[in-house]
Length: 152
Image (cartoon, rainbow, N blue to C red; front, side):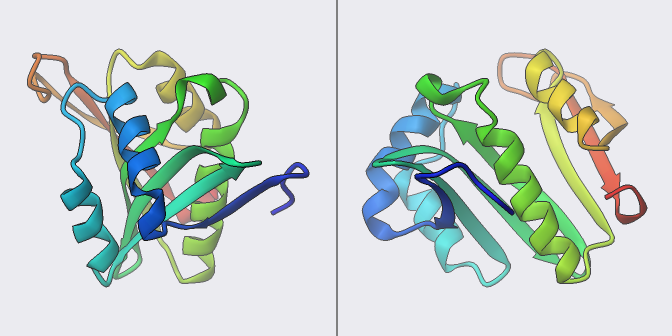
């Protein structure tokens, strides 16, 4: 994958946790804690990829790849970097790596009202599989979306 000059995607480092937690808190009503990110780092099926934009961490994507299924666990982009292709590049990078490792299906859940995210996932080939009423603590529904490897 070709990224703009000064941009890179790399694994999470311990020193990244404060910035990642700050992004998470800016994006989620019930954010993951530093301990939860550390647990993900230690999980053998989990990957946390960081989008580095110059000196700043612009976003991250946490995923699991198990038995040919990719599960997008958490994707967040810092407010100053939204609508600039960070989420798309992270997703394309992770999906490409998972395909190379034998992925058959990718899954994710997204707030039904997060229209920019839903639109991006659909542009990348994800299709609605189910709606989970009142899934989030505030009562919002979740959409479960899937991407079959034949569409990647």
